Image 1 (spheres, protein in one colour):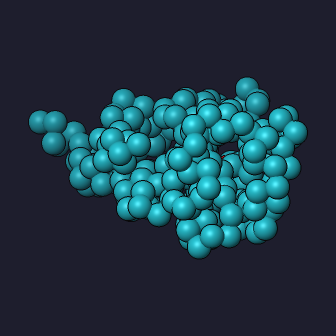
Image 2: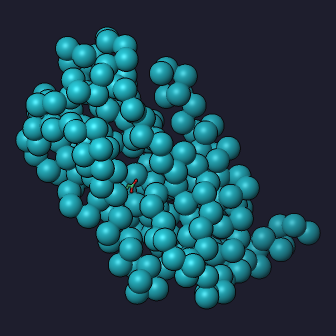
Length: 227
Ligand code: PGA
């Protein structure tokens, strides 16, 4: 039977994901592990730089990140949008404005992700291209801490929209409608092209690509509807 075949898939799955993917990948693991009870998962969450190092050291089966290395040595499959949005406290003066010109962010108190973060790179590139100079008040290595700092009134930030899923932040933070945003970005599942995936890793890879998007979308629907 199908259940017997599923029971045959046994072993460890080693994953590493960038910090923004930690908001959705653990949710996908629930149904996956129910279907394949013989599979144990080890999940490492790190920023872009840390993930690149793990990839170079060949530590995991699969890696989930937004900016795949430009080299033929990895196989790379896009599986979900990961838009970067401007987040502000509910009572920010720009909260209700539409089509805010990007120049309006000049001098805004800003909370930036730490060096080594892919989010930081994407934000800095955008500001550089558009000649925008925000006032970086704080540089913080955690999406969660940045949400707290925004809510506390330290400034605005640019983070993945996925950091807002599920936990009721909608009542404290708002997405500003700034020209040029969201910055389009995607999540990719990658692995070294020279590496034969284990049966277990291949099973998760197929699950992610075939069913992942739908599973994530249904679990984040509540937030999307309120936007
Ligand atoms: P980060 O990764 O955690 O390094 O910012 C997110 C991204 O690259 O989109």
